[in-house]
Length: 235
Image (tube, rainbow, N blue to C red; front, side, top):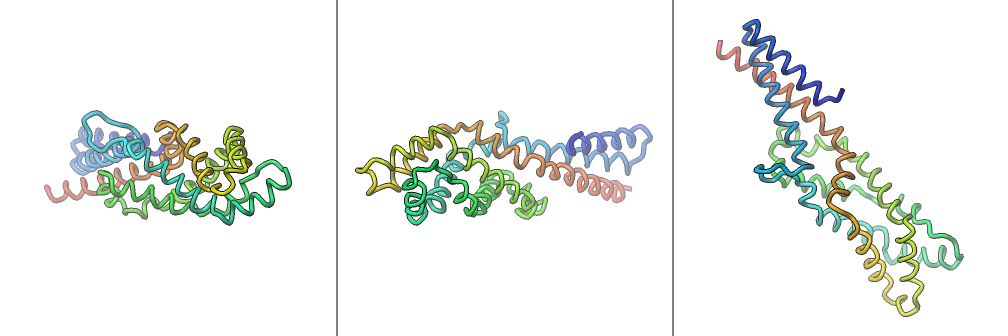
């Protein structure tokens, strides 16, 4: 049983008990808790899915192109730098061994990519709601899972046969050696063009949905507290 469902179930039970036994504290506490948890559950859902009539929903998919550009920038700025390319060519290609880019990827700092994702969420219609839950700090537990998943995803991309063959074919052409970075960038663009908005959504969704479930829990908790205070004030 996931956290979101359990929170809504408890809030609904408290509300029903308060209504049946005519207990204002339980009634208002359960009602406000259910309202807060359902609202946050909808907000988490709207991050990934487009909801007709609700502006700003599906923000992850809507920023699909920005996400791809972020991956490209990361790979070109930190992975395929001139120094790394020279080292790779001298060591890997001259020895005639299979291309293994994983050791280089392990040294890449993926934190700027996570910061970019947080910025996208903060600048979306959900920024205000996130601020109520602690702002960007509420997403801090997602950083390490995100970094690990991104490393795995980039390694998977570079280990695909079509990526390796395209990269090797480009850099082995004598006339291309003088502008190798541009050709590598072209290969990366071709591979990223194979990504779809649905694939990007699944990558991000698997990483953060579990952690964002706590937004639903705390929405229920804070809603319940507000409901109890409202009942006391009304009394």
